[in-house]
Amino acid sequence: MRPGSSVGNGGHNGVVLRHLRQAERPPRPDPYRRLPSLVFQLLREESPDDVRRRIAAALQLLVPHDTLRLDDVDPEELRRTLALGERAPRPDSARPDAYRRRSLQIPLVAHGTLVGELEVTRATGEPFDEREVEVLVSFAELASLTLHNAHVRAELLRLANTDALTGLANRRGLTRALAVSPAGDRSLLLLDLDGLKEVNDEVGYEAGDLVIQAAADALRAELEGDELAARLGGDEFVALLCCGEADALERGARVTAALDDLPLPVEIRARFRGGSVGAVTAGPGEATDALLRRAALHMRARKQARRTDRTAPQG
Image (cartoon, rainbow, N blue to C red; front, side, top):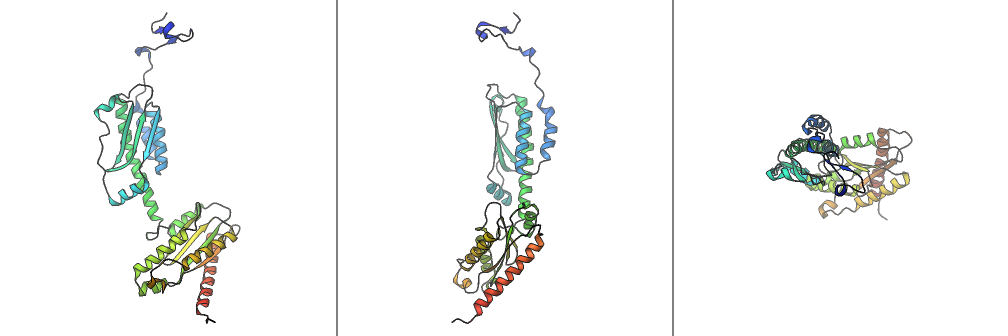
């Protein structure tokens, strides 16, 4: 019998189980050798989701483990933290007692901001050794910076494509959405508010902002799925809908009714006259600019009809 082999109590149904002695075990690759290439791949990612996926893939190659948990911070909480410049207390990622643990929890902190937490667990009973912990902590620091930068990039992109007053897309955001909108039924609502100038001039611009925000909420309420609403500027809005002509006309009528019945203070209500909505459906291969022009024609016709109705003598 060879040294290191066993039968009887060490076997199962007569099968010889060979236990490698320490000297016979193949050397475990140094995880630090993999670190530069994995970090390079990580730095190439831009979105937070892609960064998280790359972190998980890299850890599979860096340190043997059984389970991995990568928690993200709530996006709204992180957005508030980034906006206010708040700093989280930096935890001690490599506590002395961590070197004999089978489960490691490593906070992901960058520039004083907590962006997530990494937990790596080994169920085999073999604890993480000192070098593995050092690699995990080193990688976590770089992963934290990359994830933080991805969140900052995503927030800057969101701000660049969002109207600050309403939270809807702005003209740039609409252009981006139109560039990637899927083929198929596509309709557009173009909305212009009536009487906003009088509200601004006679009640004040804060009152006008209140009207704009309420109108944005009414338009947003009509969106479904991945549909998009945008404020083009001033008192003009647009909604990009994934529906046919009949549905677009019905939804445009609902938006008009909602604008006519906005819950506004009496002094604003006396001057605000609702909104005029033009609803059009894209023809085969119709360009976006042509669709917007047709929507503008429909919207102006509705505005003129509403003006005529208001000035017509009452019987």
